Image (cartoon, rainbow, N blue to C red; front, side):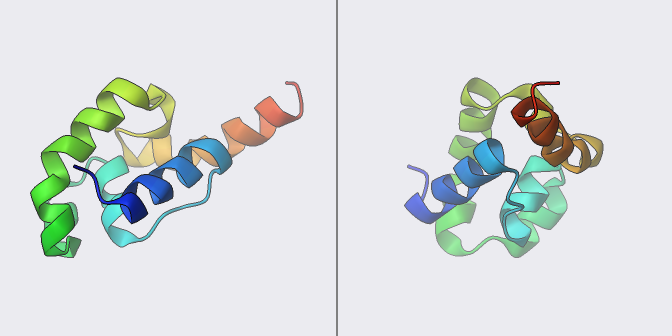
Length: 83
């Protein structure tokens, strides 16, 4: 089970480009070492489920590499402007 605060942070990232805290940013950037070092016990236990959720539910352009994370807010802005 993904902690509700983590799911909300990821949803805000996906929908609004609101960069989450350090743990979630490490996860969406695909930085496992950073994610594990920043995780609290609850998120550490949920890490496999968080990754599965991203893989199955999140747009592939919003996670997976630092470049995707960097470009996602601009993508959302251009989408909102009809470009």
